[in-house]
Amino acid sequence: MDHFQYKNGELAAEDVPLSRIAETVGTPFYCYSTATIERHFNVFADALKGLPATVCYSVKANGNLAVVSTLARLGAGADVVSGGELTRALAAGIPANKIVFSGVGKTEAEISQALTSNILQINVESGPELERINEVAASLGKVADVAFRINPDVDAETHQKISTGRQEDKFGIDWDRVHEVFTAAASLENVRPVGLAMHIGSQLTKLDPFRNAFNRLARTTADLREKGFEIKRLDLGGGLGIPYDGGDTPTPADYGKLVAETVGDLGCELLFEPGRLIMGNAGVLVTKVVYVKDGASRRFVIIDAAMNDLIRPAMYDAHHDIVPVSEPRPDAGLQPVDVVGPVCETGDTFATELALPPVEQSELLAVRSAGAYGAVMSSTYNSRALVPEVLVKGGEFAVVRRRVEIESVLAHESLPNWLESS
Image (cartoon, rainbow, N blue to C red; front, side, top):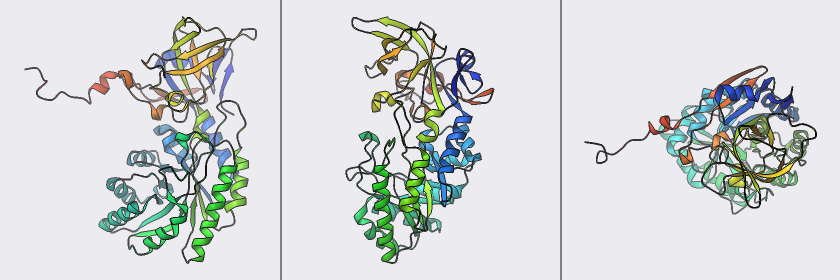
């Protein structure tokens, strides 16, 4: 469920018509619903009641400061994958002792930042990284709490570009080498192994991959404990999908039941890293029709949003529902159109042969389920402005990232002295 519904003939975010926001900030823009963010977080957290669980929101899904701050006030922790995301999480009010630092390529500077910020743990993904963490911790006179991310060699049955738990993927330590890495860690003075971590991919629409991965994690935990290693914390990652295409997906309640069945009796603190599940349906991208063009074999609806604003369709062949902001008449006929952007790439296509009611030039459209991996992955390709982000709460809205025009981008560039005018 989300809070983007037609009211009085217009699509509204909670109680704010999207057309009113468009009049104020222009198009394209992202709009997020506070009520939807809160509902999705609470539904997920409620599904884990009875378990020693901490929900660490995956900042990479949507790092807007206002979004992360909204979640911080609900009690969320954070999963971060860069020094910049760590800075964002802290600035948004996430307590340091509820932050987990993941990712395969942490630099010395990022490790130092994590340690001096006193975060909960660093998820280690390789032997060389373990050694570097030990060295940095020693230089700071600290002991780093670490969990080892294992690669369980489980196919998440999702898009290959967002699958992270197969043997051929770059993430984690092979599950059958974990004992070796724990043994190596035992000889280091400035790291303290506290547990295991796992994340097998994103946008999972079946529970079986989770079941297979969690069972392997449980067996690995038991094996390590038999060898005398303490495992007090398990990070189960995120990855639960949302119904972009209207299909069935597992509910948080189903997921919580599976967690309890597979790892709930291990006596471990449990960490979770949902991102898309919380933010995906909490946001839309609002855009304006620039032209309606009839080609030789199809009709093109050309909009002012582009692949630089929402890259998921071009990168992942992702589906997003696209609907008119003005509610169509019940008897409005549907016609197949291609919804495309203005960027000079054939890949700048949001939908092919999408059944839409007739739309006209200057009409507003909303690209649904765009709250995760939308604005956070946007760029200035074709020297286009970065679009604004708007947060709605009830009948109010606020611009939480202004439009970054090309003049602001150019201000960060300069000419070398040999190109400057004399």
